[in-house]
Length: 359
Image 1: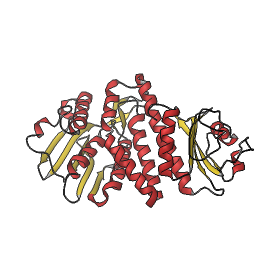
Image 2: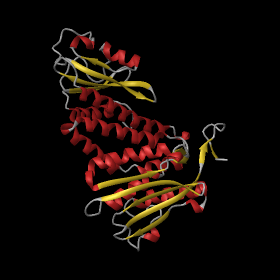
Image 3: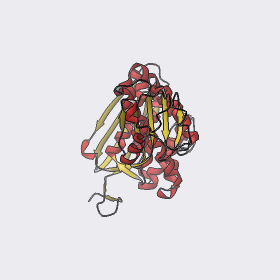
Image 4: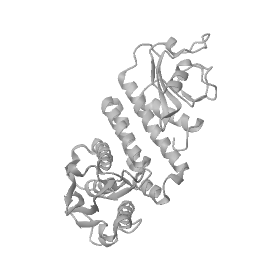
């Protein structure tokens, strides 16, 4: 869906949904046509044809989900055929609150749609909406600076996304409710990462992004990954550079805890020091070898870690001065601690989203 809504992307998406949703048939439409149909269904509604069912038009017009528990509820004008589809959940696909199509999960028996199927349909639609928002953002690059887009892209590790989807697929069979919650968290993570158009978000929003990331990683690593949080709640409304904390936490998990034998702990501490915000991300993982430490902030250095750390380090220095860059302390076999200081910033009520120093 990053390439937009068309027949090719819709077909690939429908195949994935049918597999993880364990439903007989899946259809995806835009506002006018059927873009993809996977599974048993009426041959009179192939991809490329105009939408026939009035139930689908109703969802497009109202922007509200519809559950059809029997074939008559679909309000299909074609009656002289042997269509096997007896019930469905139809969910609007939205881009920035505008309905651009629908996703339909069909069943071949009539009756109530299982709650897990409904929740999964909603979660999938939200995630696809986020992916399409990202595509729209890339097409409208004038909304953000090139540096910001590069920074955002650098933080989203494709292996993290692939592994998370695999984890969700596993839970679909064994624990559908957990799968639904993880899907919603994944959508929330991407929404935060890509919807921002400025340099700043609140500390609370940044921590929500970190929490979404950690919940997804905890689903993979279970007890191996422990989290300790110590946050001064009086600082939650203050502004911090967008996507500052999450890359540091990801670095601690990926390069500190994952290679370690046994369990590990990542600690997140945000406190007030000398009228500044002090942020510290620490882990008790494998640490960084001494010969690597001098190069750790070099752009592109290492197996992915240099990109995220150098990006955050340079952005902090460019925004606030050299003294606000990352301070790193690490010992091989002892773990790593990253710390930085931020001025206390509050969103100005008179600068259209600008940021001003607290008086």
